[in-house]
Amino acid sequence: MNESDMARMSVAMSAPTPIVSVSPVVLSAPGRAMDLQMRVSAPVTGRDLPIILFSHGHGNSWYLSSLNGYGPLANFWAAHGFVVIQPTHLDSRVLGLRDAPGGPLFWRSRVEDMKRILDQLDLIEASVPELSGRLDRSRIAAAGHSLGGYTTSMLLGARLIDPKDGTEVNMADSRIKAGVLLAAPGKGGADLSAFAAEHYSFFLNTSFAEMTTPALVVAGDKDVSPHLTVRGADWHADPYFLSPGPKCLLTLFGAEHGLGGIAGYDAAETTDENPERLAAVQRLTWAYLRTALYPEDSAWPAARTALMESPNPLGRIESR
Image (cartoon, rainbow, N blue to C red; front, side, top):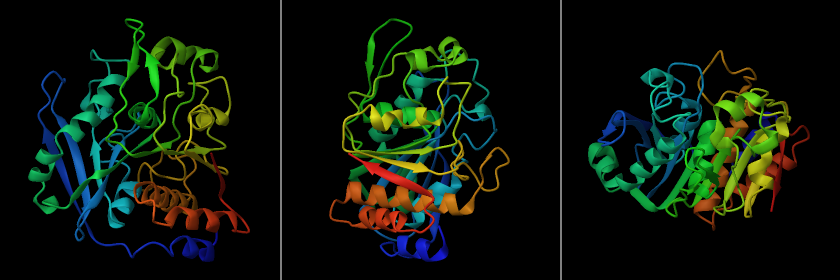
């Protein structure tokens, strides 16, 4: 995508504003291994601000998979009008709890973290004076990368069978009005690798059939994950194809699991670092959420048109 294309994608966007970022904001969490810590970022101006809850991935870095990661997304979204709340989940390497009870990967605790934030928005607002009176609780989205995408899918309505007791788990939350799944896992069963089936058994019976909340699924066409699946990169598009509409799928050409560098600035573990691709993810996710939360806003149709009309598009968009 050349500079002209990027400029056209930016037509519907206001200029970025300075942001304030406060961390750690701490919520008491009885029954959790430790209290819930988060980062809250917001533009310094504006009222009635929509909210994005962001769930980090299960990476091997110390700090990217925590409240301190994903600056390229969180800062961009905040600079363009969102309040972004980033919890540190218990599977974050920085906490040193990966072998503690609650596994594998603290999949249930992760969703509970997001719900706890929704339950205590008043307390969060009181803890961050810069937010006082500025939140729009009727416009809340959830987003997540990799395992965070799986966490987000459960909030949107995806279900699974608890491997411990065989019960169906439904943790959908109607307070979430839209979602963005970034390089999220696909379906389980025979599509899982032997390693994933053995160690991440909660993946085995995932169903997207009840994931009815509107969502944008973002997948790289080079995002091959042999430790998780016997399939190719198309596995990460399953949440789009196996869920009911309305859904959109953004397939990024040449993108691997890092989607151009969303997890951090100059992160060595981003195997496909690409500033243009990152800029496209920033703008397209922002545009999708603007229109999803404000249906009268034309940001998403305009961004789609800019991508499709580019002579050298970085990806393609499908919808249903």
